[in-house]
Image (tube, rainbow, N blue to C red; front, side, top):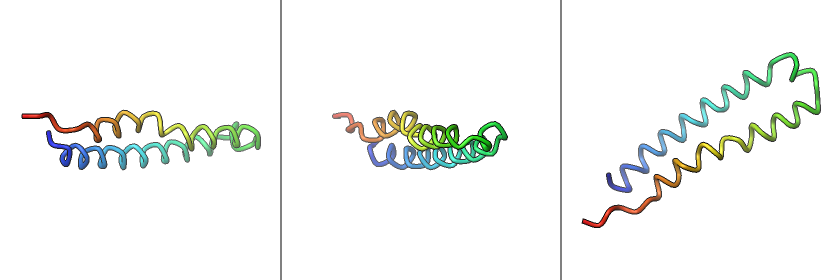
Amino acid sequence: MTIRTRKFFGTLALLALVVVWSLLGMTIAQTPWLANSGLLQAIFYVVAGLGWVLPAMPIVSWMSRPDRAV
């Protein structure tokens, strides 16, 4: 697979990850136990805002891998 193809599929995977991550984050943020506590909300938004980077790192690493020499 060429780097161009990997970047295309990686971009689609990252877009899907961001959409799913944000929808899950919005769903969890509306739960009563979290919505009633300012401290828990702050912690949740920091974790949720930075948390998507961990699953995205392997995708970006795979996308930027150089082509195999033929």
